[in-house]
Amino acid sequence: MKKTLLAAALLAGFAGAASAQSSVTLYGILDAGLIYKNAKYSNTDTNISEFGMAYGTQSGNRLGFKGVEDMGSGNRLTFQLENGFDIGNGTLGQSSRLFGRQAWFGVENDAWGYARMGRQLNFATDYFGALDPFAQGFAQANIGSVFGSTNTYRLSNALKYQTPTMGGFTAGVMYSFATGIDSTYIQNGATSGSGYNYASQDNTRQISLGAKYANGPIYAAVSYDKLYGASNILGGSPDASPSEWNLGASYDFNVVKVNAVYGQTRGGWMAGQNNQGNSGAAISVGPAVFGNGLNIYDTNWGVNSYQVGLTAPIGAASKVFASWNMAMPNGNMQEAYNAKNMSVYNVGYSYDFTKRTNMYAYVSYANNYATIDGLQSTVLGVGLRHQF
Image 1 (cartoon, one colour):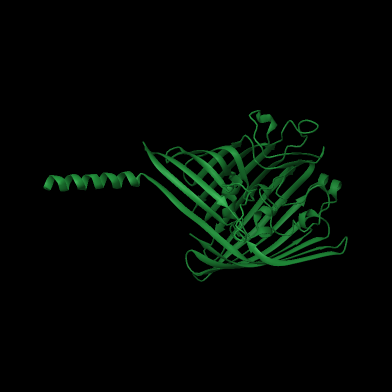
Image 2 (tube, rainbow, N blue to C red):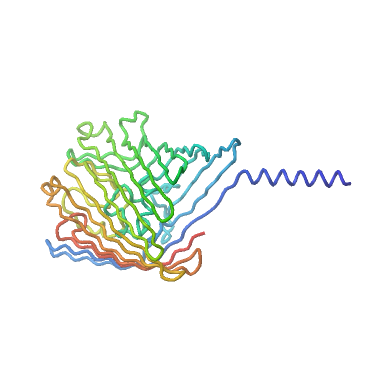
């Protein structure tokens, strides 16, 4: 009898150990509210206003799975499948992809870092979200309105490696064999799709590099992204090769956290997603508009980008955050398109009902939106977000 009980106890212990070595976690975010938009274009006396439901304002609506399996010797197999959807009508997001937000698996180890393959975020998105007071949400208000590669920028068919954190430093390199993002080539008027060819020179490819330092109240990050256009487009390989580098830092004084970011974009524009502000207001001048969701190849395009922001807690459950973003066109872009300095002023507020549920409100105003002279964009929104 005692031997039977002992055997049963040992089997239960082994079963518990085996189950502890692998796990799958279900998670998600639900976000919905109301939004008001107004776009004014002084050159044509155009004035467009819209009011209605808004979804995924603070955080995109999602349902995802994370998994990990212990393979021994400190190695772990990991994966993440994350679906994006419109909670208003239940349709798929990210161009109707089943797991459009993320879809990857890989191997990691505390000693050497991780290696992953699949659809993933670039390092500018990974590292600069911590520097944005609006955490890459709130549409027009977030850092991606003037730093395109930080705008929740996803790359398909990508290999990604990140080092372990050593003394607060972390770095990584990433290469996409086919980005999955549609592109427009301004010089010859051609476009390339988001498909995948084994002749990789016929794909839109991209390299992403990044490094960050996090230690106590100090956080700093740097990133570099470069696009390589498909060679089989009309007229041959594109003349332009868009690139963007960014540098930023923040310091947390406890009563307020302040940040500053600077970057340069040349040869085009990287647009990971629509800004969900007034970019769809049917007002466009020149060949391209910020935040239209396309990568733009254009030898005339050049922008210097700036952000200054702050986040201040108000008691234990609420906070206020604000930022000023600016995109300053270089001389070539000014001459080619009469492009003007774009300034965006943003203020937001969040209140936590619980650790998982909060409400938010924000207002964003842009002057010379999309660097278009005389185009003003105003967005106001309120909403409720739940995480599970």
